[in-house]
Length: 508
Ligand SMILES: Nc1ncnc2c1ncn2[C@@H]1O[C@H](COP(=O)(O)OP(=O)(O)OP(=O)(O)O)[C@@H](O)[C@H]1O
Ligand SMILES: [Mg+2]
Image (cartoon, rainbow, N blue to C red; front, side, top):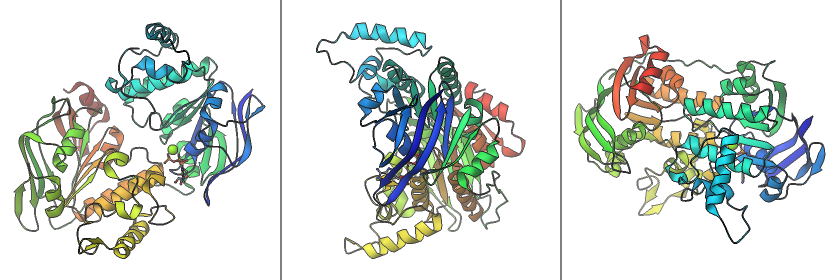
């Protein structure tokens, strides 16, 4: 029986149409994929279902009953639960407190009783959690379990998961899929949003593809291929293959970055990078493969100057001037001013961008003090806007104009803004951390081609990603990081994916 049906749903933001005349129906007890490029309108449509936005037109039916979802509370009453793209838990509260938040209207709260209830629910769904643990101390995979339990505690019958796997490690993805299959077998209806088509093929039965706010296809995974779904999303043929021709820049192969016996501590003052040494050359991509949390973040931050080094050296060479500088203790502003380092941080929203600033201002964050953007301590708006217009053209950033706040751009376009800023100065060294996280296929292809073009120009690139296939596709050599140590550096020409996977999880 049809569990959810949408008829003619339309949603505008000002003049912009985010969802247009959406018709969609989902059978009860199935897992349905919602696909589309960055900005296609997936999250907007789901936010309408969970009462965060009201549609301008259209009707929602639950089990063929027309419903009006005017607030999140109404959505919960109707049995709709959403696990958002960015989690909405309170880190300082315990698992139990997070799960019952907003449901307990009685003035006398018996927390230990509630913790027992939650243990019982978590056992019955095979979703093990520690009810008294603080959410901030839990790994992301477990935090997500808390989000799912929170929805189930509110008796959700329709579960919406907005890009749930973007932040998970492969074993966490496996365990999430087992949970979702079990929930669907028990009768829950699930909407699953992901940019990773192999996940969709593995998990989902039916698919809706959105493009530019409209439904362009409703199909099943059985009757489509990955390539077909990809092309429906993007509306054009995709290469799905990278052009990694060799670079012939004049400094090809010369050392650009030298890291010697580096030690870096994390926030808790524990050793996160332990005795790491490597060299990175002009025209080379050195991939860093590892399970999340094995020191990648601290290594990238230390090279960019955002985290102190407790031992060891970082040296940067400029082959055009035949100089080598020891930059180990240089502050970031000095690195920005004198050296050409581009840094694409892992979290674009907190580290890569000032989310409340305009697109144009975000593009000059590193150079706003200098001509032509600043003259006699005054920002030169004409120059800033011209610079932004050129970047919008060159990097194909989809935005109405350069004055738009970056918070209003979709994920893929936010990433293009970071990329445009970090590579526009033709850096000699680029540190790219999870540069395609949360991006659709078209934007992923674009970011990767851009970095390969930088490699061909002669840049040295440190490419850090938890997606093993991506690291292998992009890199010339692959360094495997495990518990803060580089356990091996392999040449890409004879690399074996199983072997790298083994090194990543076992270290030897
Ligand atoms: N509150 C808002 N105000 C103005 N525009 C918005 C707002 N929310 C979303 N948009 C715009 O609506 C479009 C659809 O955004 P939405 O977040 O639904 O995309 P998405 O398909 O979820 O993309 P992604 O894969 O990047 O998450 C985007 O172009 C976005 O800029
Ligand atoms: Mg989204």
